[in-house]
Length: 178
Image 1 (cartoon, helix red, strand yellow):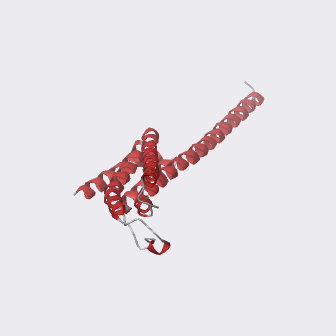
Image 2 (spheres, helix red, strand yellow; image 1 turned 90 degrees about the vertical axis):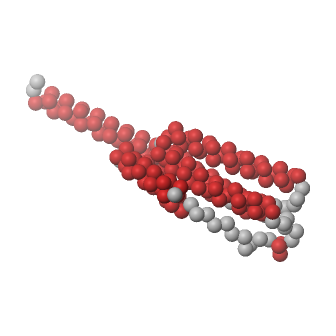
Image 3 (cartoon, rainbow, N blue to C red; image 1 turned 90 degrees about the horizontal axis):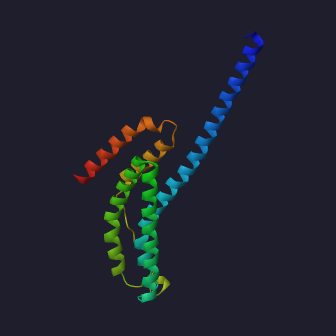
């Protein structure tokens, strides 16, 4: 092989390598954007769930049609959370586990808040609008861990950080159950 052939071969190899790296970077960015949208939508479903006591409290009337509309929204919200839980399980088990911990913690508080909201009187006028009703959620550590797991899964080095994320999740679950 002469020098011209070696240079031609090396040029071809470098070109192929640059093309492969460019393709990999482009695919990683597309996948990252898609996953970020899925993660954001899953978190939005939790926020929507936290808002259900307010939805119930602000109901329009005591009639069956109002209850049916609220029940429809609650069912749709529950289906959305189950969907996201399934998608996250398929995409990333560690993100799904942290999302589940957030959901479990939130669910423990939403239930009593919803019961309280159903017991509140129906709003008859604007003056009765319950602006003072506030439902505080003690799920900050679960939110933080879920966001951390999602951020880590979006990084290039996700596989290297899963063990630490799993350890943090186990510690959080143990501390919350104590």
